[in-house]
Amino acid sequence: MTLKTATPLALDTTPGGERRKPVRRRSTQVQDTPVDRIFMVGVYILLSTFLLIVLVPLINIVASSFSSPAAVSGGRVFLWPVDFTLIGYQAVLTSDAILTGFGNSVFYAVVGTIVSVTLTVMIAYPLSRSELVGRKVLIGGVLFTMLFSGGLIPTYMVVRSLGLLDTRWALILPTAIAAWQVLIAMTFFRSSIPGELYEAAQLDGASDLRFLWSVVLPLSKPLLAVIALMYGIGQWNSYFSALIYLRSEELYPLQLVLRNILIVNNTGGTNLADQMAAEQMADLMKFSLIVVSTVPVLLVYPFVARHFTKGVMLGSVKG
Image 1 (cartoon, one colour):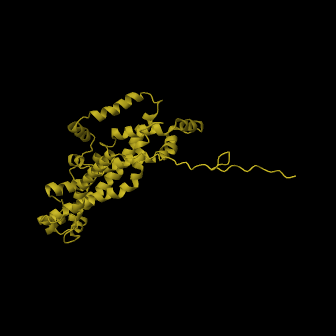
Image 2 (spheres, rainbow, N blue to C red; image 1 turned 180 degrees about the vertical axis):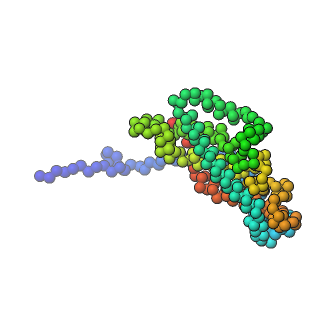
Image 3 (cartoon, rainbow, N blue to C red; image 1 turned 30 degrees about the horizontal axis):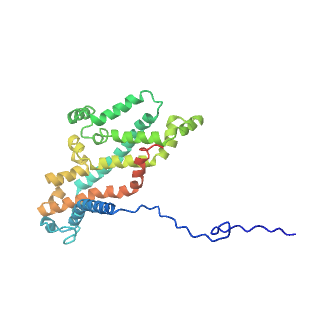
């Protein structure tokens, strides 16, 4: 005796065996109204205008750096090189003052960033721990520095009393810690490092320093990339501190050398002065040096950009 099993009903039939009518699903996509379309067109036009305002001068600088001195001085360069030549870059890359300034800027940017990131983590992580005694008072002191500062003359007197004038450390130590970066790091540590990890590390016998080095820092790579980019760009573009604290030209960063060429037309070297004897050559070298001083930042930024938004936003929203 064989058992017959009931055939399951098809999904497109009713219990009575009748065929169902296909049901059309309604689209959940919100249709834009004419007003919305007009608004978006206006937004794109406005953004395109801003893009052109920023992009056109940059293209003009690059095009001028590859043009002949006569074309640059005559104002005949717009968006494409005229009488293509590399003489401007040749003069820049063979200048002792510019090469020395470039090496100094690399030193200030690399060493300054390492010092700044280290000190920022050292102050931000303890402030993120709720069990720190006097935490609110210390946070208030950090916030106070964002609103008030001693000013240029007291800062200069402090740097002079510490014996840092005309030294490389005068460009690194006075600006080593920024209150804004400390707040970003502190908020990141509080919202992104679970307290359970700290408790588990304590049970395993790990010290606070070991927990910071082995657990917190590996989980904070986006944050470290963000604050390193902020400090690095600030150090690379800084020239005012060098203008105030430095007297020896062999310590000048590239930005101060560029400032002297753009404003004072002083290159700081006999070889470069001979090359820039003509006014046309001086104009060409200005554009070439601007491009050379911008390239390092453009090369570093793509490696950090993917962490930038993530590193800032992780500490901004809870839950």
